[in-house]
Image (cartoon, rainbow, N blue to C red; front, side, top):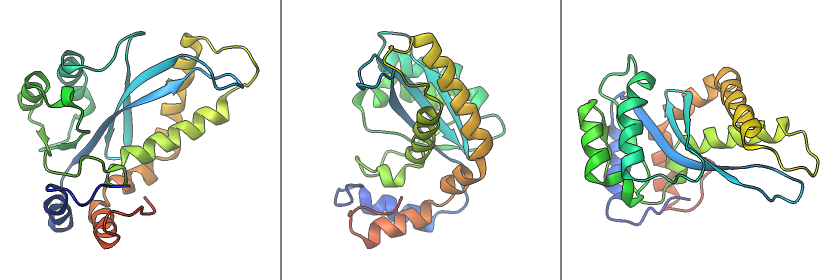
Length: 199
């Protein structure tokens, strides 16, 4: 549910509703869990970038958390290959402090990516990658073998990569549409004045 009543929210919504066709990208961190029946296990941190219907992921090393240096490295070494053929892309990202430090900001500038910095701080209904994470979680649940044994990290990571490839193949059209409906999303959020929408 977006926090619509913030200083940046309404201008951002107006921009979405009035914008022309642009390459809008969505990036965010997610946590995967090595499953057991008791829902206990080790968290696996995953960074995702949704590019016109295609989800790209980068799995952080064990014990690593996203910080300014990790994010700047990711931008410099992963974003260019993920963004091939995309001109003048605009990235929507969370408002975690580390994402807005000098290092990632300069890294974005160096590869020609603009970060949209005037949108609601809490806006899952406006971020299409939330829908991609939902597809991914459902696929992970469907491929989990069950049992009481804790899944090994290596096995989970392999299953995670396979699940990402699967949703990119089987949900590409749907995710592509979700990446291109910002006007509709913004209109719904504006209409409901920050209440939960169907997105």
